[in-house]
Length: 116
Image (cartoon, rainbow, N blue to C red; front, side):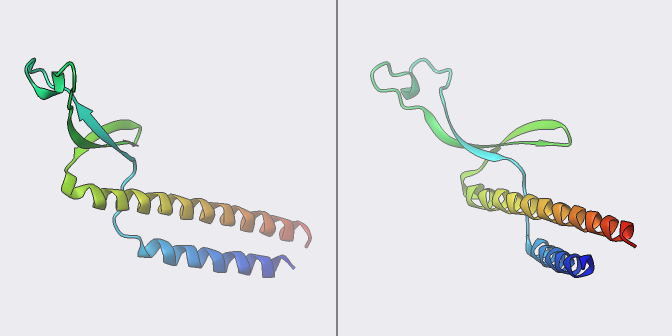
C-alpha cells in the first residue's frame, strides 16, 4: 500500500526538480527604498519649511553564510533584482516542499519495513 504513496510522492519530487531547473538568476534579501539627508547646511534637504530628501536610493539587504550585508542597487537594475529575489523565494519554497516530501517517503519506507 505504501509503495503507491511513495511513487506518488516521487512523481511530485520530479515535478519540483523540473520547476527548479527552470529558475534562472536568484538572489536572497529584501529591497528597500531610501531617502537621505546630506551634510550641506544650505541644501534643499535641510530646508526647515519644505525639506526634500535626496533619493530614492534602493538598498538590498541580505544574510549569506552568517554574514549580513547591504548594498545599493542602481535604479536601472531594480526590476531585475526584484525578479531575482522572487525567484529565490520560489526556489526556497520548492526546496522546502522537496524536503517535506522526502521525509514523508522516508517515514513510509520505515513503516513498510516494519510491517514485513
